[in-house]
Length: 258
Image (cartoon, rainbow, N blue to C red; front, side):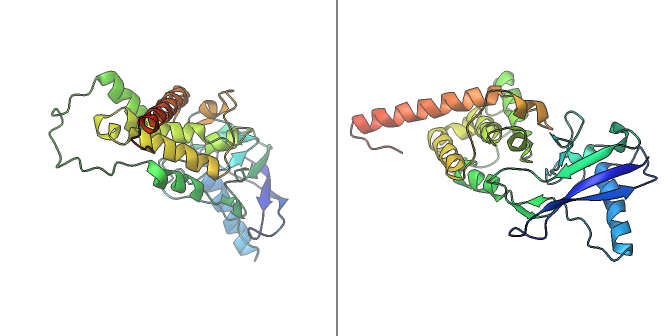
C-alpha cells in the first residue's frame, strides 16, 4: 500500500510548526500505524533527515502515550483502539493521511507529534488516590461490594489517560478523564473516606489548568479507546455538588470545611 503523509513538524515548543508531506510506499496492510511511522523514520535517517518525533511505549493499548490526531480523529479511523492498535488496512491504498498532535492549550506541543500531558498527572496528584490507612491486604471476600458497583468501578478504572477525550472535545474538556478517576474510587468503600475532598480538589485543578467545560455532545465517549461512559460525568457532578453542599452545611454549623 502507498500513502501520502502530511505530518506536523515542529522543532520545539517555541518554534512555529508546519505540515510536511512525505510519500511512503510498499506498506503492508497488516502494519500498525506506529510501525508505518518507524519505517518512515528509517527512510528519513538514511536520507540524513531528522526523523519524526512521536510518543510510544507499550504498543499494546495500555500506556496511552501513542496519542495522535489522524485524519481529524483521535487515534484515527477505528473505534475503541489506541494509535498503536490502528492498522493500515483501515486506510485505502493511495490515501492522504494527516497526522497531528493533540490540540489543546493544557497539552502544549513539545516537538513534532509529542505534546506535554503533565496536566493529567497534576489532576491525579490533586486527589486521584487513597491516602488513608486501609490496613493490610484483606481477603477478596472480606469487604462486600455489590457486583454492579464493582463492575462500574472497574469500567471507569480502565481509563489510560491518553487524552483522546480532550482532543475530541471542541472545548478541550477533561471531564471524562476526571470523572473516570473520581468514579472508580468513589464507588468503592476504600475511596469513600476522602470522596468529598477528592472530587473538589480534582475538579478545581482541572479548571485551574485551563481545560474547557463539557459540551454534552458525547464526542469524548465516542473517541475513547477504552469506551469510558459519559455516565461517569453525571456521577462526578453528583459527587461534586454533594461535596459542595456538605461543605456549606459544615461551615454554616461552625465546623469549617474544605
